[in-house]
Length: 289
Image 1 (cartoon, rainbow, N blue to C red):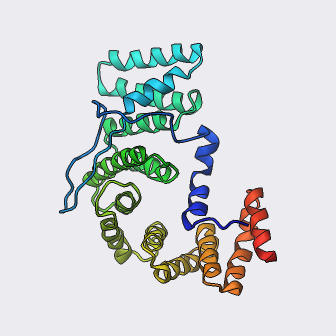
Image 2 (tube, rainbow, N blue to C red):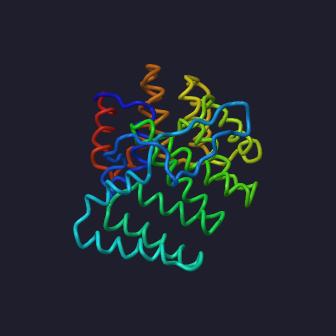
């Protein structure tokens, strides 16, 4: 079989349910200038430069609206009208929730859905919801090819995680999320500076699987395969059923021509992929080589 890259398996697992719900995360949109809906900062807290994006959320909303059936356009218009007529933050927040659900269930468009989830989180200023919205962008930008869209999603995630950390500077999930955003979001000319934010969390709690996995991915990105292997083996000791870590370890060992080690992890992974027939078939092929 044609071997996948390190990120391919990891990403396919993370976004599988999103793809089933929305079909695709990459909208048919051309690059456009900034508009009033942007939420990003043009400077960072370090000497590195935080980049900007020419992606326009207003353009995407307009394009996706044009794909809707007439009855859905009418429903959407009513909800949008309620936003304009809302007298207070509570009414507006309710309308944002309605808009996010509309785009998730009827519009089947991820970017508008995530946008209104984020707008609701910003308005509510809830640590939990800001963190959720940040991870929503972060977890899905890794499946997007359009660089401007990736950066825009990264900037949204950065803004949301930073707002969450203002409410609780000890939120480890937000810290790791912010670090991962620097690594994967294309928002900085020094992407690996995100690693220092994640190492902070690992130094405090070496059993934080999210932080360990993110550092392992960072090591793979920078070609430090042995460091990645060490972290992935730590993850499998802490969580013996961690499928992502097993598959990545198997791939590392196979690329190092250590077939028996690779087979060991493929065998461990096989019982965990029964729900994914195609992946199970590919793993069985690996074990027959």
